[in-house]
Image (tube, rainbow, N blue to C red):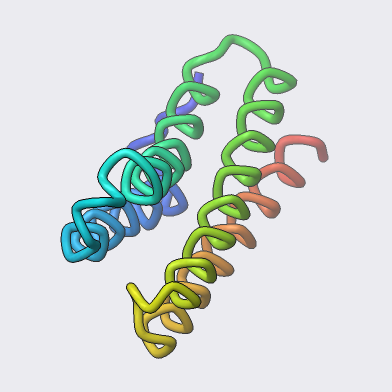
Length: 117
């Protein structure tokens, strides 16, 4: 088992969750059960899946959960782009979050590689 709280990628992903929640708080209420819910769930899924995988008994399982976390990060990116297109999030905010997401994605990929070497 890995100590997920010590993983920088988990810590960064947790910070991202807080940012996404703050952003979606400002969305129109009509998006409560749509984009708000979906974005929050995707954001939460990134660190949660890392933690779940870290608690598994095998490296293969951890690697699988990291892949799921990576998928959630790409899903969140798509929703951020859509949020901008709908006029809910300014492009400057999306661009900053894209940088953060890319950093998290790179860390997940590097962690996956380190498990398989």
